[in-house]
Image (cartoon, rainbow, N blue to C red; front, side, top):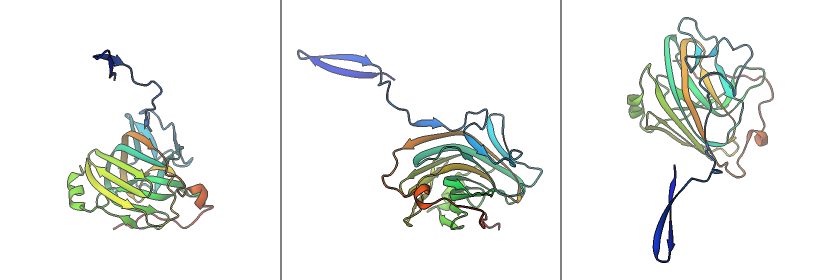
Length: 242
């Protein structure tokens, strides 16, 4: 988009159309190219669970139960950001659930990730679960009824997640879903972004239109490097199945 530059010469206003600064950085980037899982890591024994079908990241099955929690994760780590994606979750049996990991890392020798999970699925939309760490819901919507009314069951849902410093917010189809501020001092504010298909259900998770706006990092924030990543196999577990 060109900008109008007004210059005053001899009392006369002159208008010039000028191109925007070519060096200005566009911080909004796609995280999914619509064709492949380039930029994402998949565990070597889980390629049968994750694929790209019809330009959509697809995980799980409607005919076979997913054996355990499974995640793909960005190869890159992020600090503060504004993440947007579309997600559809369908299922025929068992615990039909998904979630978006943020500020997370892999648990070595495990299929799990550890860190915040912005939840998705019936009864879980708008919640913040602490995957493999505190292993409980740590944040919920102030108006869960409004969030559930906004959700399109078995349809595509727009999810926006914004993480800035200790504050994490989310919106589902434009409706405010979460506003959580971390109170513990040594929780890392960086990490990978991941997508989950939960185990023990005949579940199909589909994700598309994944973009991220990178925001300036918080000075002197705790990071996984400072706090220490998990060092080996540990007892982990997903959320309870009702």
